Amino acid sequence: MKASLLYWVLLAAFGTIHLEFLFNNLTWNVPIYLVILPVIGVVYYLYKRTLLETSSIGMRWNLILLAMQLLLVSLYFTIGLSWATFAPFLIFVGLEAIRLNGSRKISDLTHSLLEYEEQREHLNETFRIVRGERHEFLKHVSAVHFMLENGKDKEAKHYLDDLVDGYEETNLSIKGERGVVAGVLHQMYRRAQASGISVVYDLDLPLSTLPVSDSNMVTLIGNLLSNSIDACEEWQKHYEKQGVLTLQFYKRSGLYLLVCKNNSLPIPTPVLDELYHSYGHTTKGEGHEGLGTKMVKDIVEGHQGFLDFVYRDEEFTVKIKIPAIR
Image (cartoon, rainbow, N blue to C red):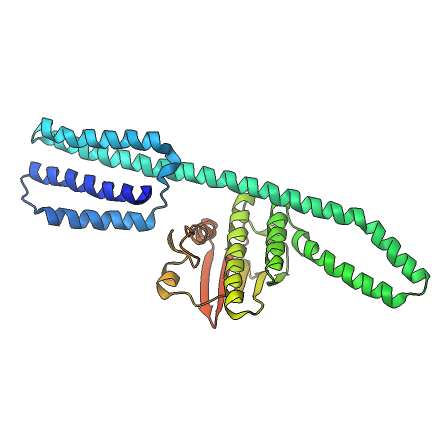
């Protein structure tokens, strides 16, 4: 049994014990099954709505909290029936609130650290590529100049066409963008190209104009494009045809509009219903935690934006609207 699942089972068990003793203290003769059912309902709701990584606070603290919960249960056998019976229950709720809040904050910090490391790698890779292209630029100019001097106009034209196609990948990603945004766009473009996916960045203005912090921008764009690439790869594998990914960005009537479209295999209705609404739902395999979609929605709503998505004719479209205010 996974540690996180074991936690929820123990939470339901401890909750049932506490409530049973409370009802006995109030001389309410409530059958045990009527206590268990609502407890399971509440725990299940928390399980579906709460991002919990029990390992984030470490085995030591988890064991300490477990020992404290066992101690609280044992108190019922010593304090007898009195108003003091409410104290263990309140402490029980407080301890679990601390555990949930603490694990969430530590998990957020861990994810932020990983994102910063990934941003640095993207920036270093983009900088290396730009520096390499700049280093080779004069060589290309010399080659074209030599062809033109020797009357090889057609060869020079073909050479320039190939050269422009090669630079297009970098130009699409870094034109007018802040460093971290350029790094993510470039890395995702290269990843998609390596998988044979046709990528179109249709950007009326730089994505960096969005009133979103660098860290949130990396999470937003990174998750959108990563999910789209994954879906296109599965679609390509199934149909043996080239998948298409399109990222559009423009401004209309005081709103920034970000639209991401990609080919996708059919998505089960239960997954679609909960996608972007809660943690743990993903269109990928069981090895994925389904965190990205909920994080995207949280960022959009945190900037007073609106997110909508639709799946039709094996194409998945996400449309994000964010007010043009800072």
